[in-house]
Length: 161
Image (tube, rainbow, N blue to C red; front, side):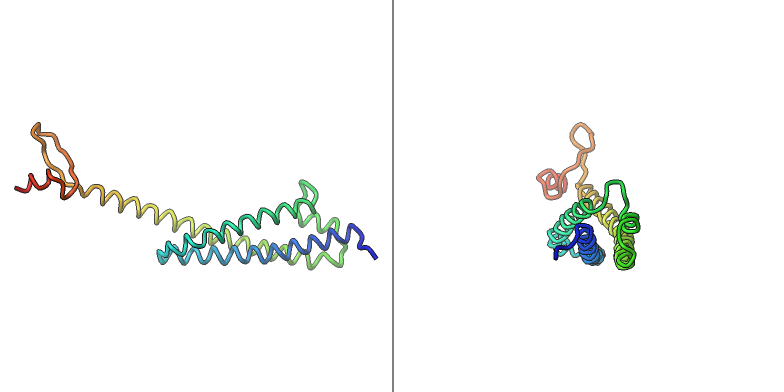
């Protein structure tokens, strides 16, 4: 006996929400991992995880496309479930949706910490770069103008004599 189209849609929505729960847990794990890598300065691991993060972004986009095909345009998923899914199936779907929302809140919080850590590392790198670049030696040329030269250059040697 064939499953009615309505029931197929509910089954697919349940699958999408289940996969979404797992997917967002994986994203949360990767955000936590990124935070630890940023705090420890483990940039090699950070770069090596980039492919995984990229894959997760693609899977999120694919899952969103599947969700859009199930839920009417301009309708929130919770509203759709309450209006179109039989009462007996609603609690399970709504609990999965709530779990996704909780995980997304955690992801956003850790993402903000990661963003702040990245900005701090960038600021530190810029300050370090400025310190290194400004360590060039200064000297006055024959016209009395201040000039800068790299350490170890011939002019630096001439000046020290």
